[in-house]
Amino acid sequence: MSYAAVSSRTFAHGFGSDLFLIQGRFVDGTYTPGPHYSDESMVDTGGSKVKSPRYLGTEIFWESMMFETTEFYSVELGGSVSTSMYDLMSTGLGAPLSIWQNNPVTQIQEQLGGKWTIESEKFTETNYDHVIITIPSWNFGTETSLVTVNRETAASKWPTSLQTFLKRAHWEPACKVFVSLKEPFWENAALSMPQMFATDTYIRDAYGIKLDVDTNQKGAMLVSYSWWRDANKLVSYSDSDLINLCVRQLDEICQRCINVNGLFSDYVDYSQSYVVHWEMERFTKGAARLYDQREWNDTQVPMMYNQVYSTTSKLYLAGESYHVDAGWTEPCMRMAIDSVLRILDNDQDSSITVPNFVFSQDYTQYNESFVPV
Ligand SMILES: Cc1cc2nc3c(=O)[nH]c(=O)nc-3n(C[C@H](O)[C@H](O)[C@H](O)COP(=O)(O)OP(=O)(O)OC[C@H]3O[C@@H](n4cnc5c(N)ncnc54)[C@H](O)[C@@H]3O)c2cc1C
Image (cartoon, rainbow, N blue to C red; front, side, top):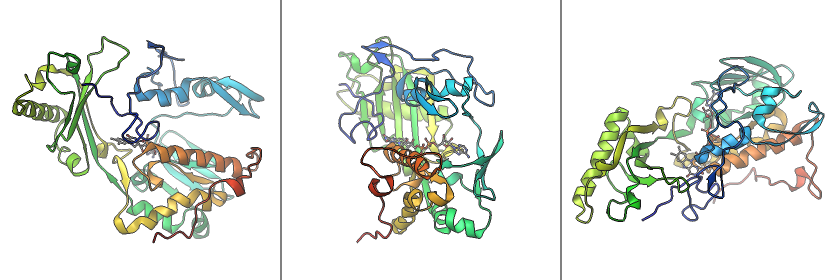
């Protein structure tokens, strides 16, 4: 049996169809790392080390955006330049681009005159014309605050209805437990150990994965993938206890199947493992943002925020927290594109020029008075 791990489901593939493992940067089956591979000398604007890209797995999405060459155009650059975002930042090239890692924003503050000041752990910078906010909603209040000049500007830039949404929206837990394997047992026809387990036990689902392109890979197993109440059940265990608990459960399932020979634990390489509880991560606090049954109209506020408020506020919302389709990357991408288009439209120094397309008339608009029947 062969099972492809689900990566970027619904973003690049279907919901349950056309799923395949995103392996990395390969050309005709040959691993072909891109720019800055193994470059240990990279630092961000604050001098913190930047991890060199490996061009493996879904990490290639952010690695490509950061390190692959693309066309940049700006007045400061004197026109168009082919470079990567990282190189643009590190070489300067006349463009004021900063990249800060591990630097939580602590306050977004409105200045008199409407520009914004950003305070973070490592810097405070004034006079931002536009700010795109992507932080998970439970970080408002706990990690970050937004301060307006007075109540009047709050009403037109950071309305009470949005603040209410941010307080009422909540986050769902999820947990994944991975172990490395001594061999990809599902490729051995003599073995009857399944590659995939779908259970009603505390581990919920488990499946094995391995890159197709490197035959020396031994593979890894997601020994537990759980959401919501099932993830809560696992939160109090140490990583090593949880790994043992999951392996024990898979062994018990194997023992109960008369057509499975051997134990799952025979194939586990305990030297490498990885456990993540999204609700324990300080800067996400959960895996997916939810809203309660009778609070659906709360979610209309952030969904329409860019359309209704950004012209005045020059703030833009994008990402998991601010859309009704939370839990998927597609609306995050959609809102990111929406934010950039609106910045181009709102800024006095830029405009959107597309033949036969007038942004204010032809770009999709929410019906602000929509009420579901
Ligand atoms: C277990 C799991 C499985 C999923 N499966 C799928 C799937 O199959 N298909 C799919 O399409 N989607 C899936 N998703 C959803 C998808 O991963 C998210 O919707 C998406 O990653 C959210 O992107 P984002 O940019 O909004 O938020 P994030 O990627 O969470 O980025 C928010 C960033 O803000 C940072 N941050 C927080 N506070 C601050 C601060 N004060 N200052 C500065 N930075 C801060 C955080 O550190 C984080 O890096 C899954 C999610 C989980 C957890």
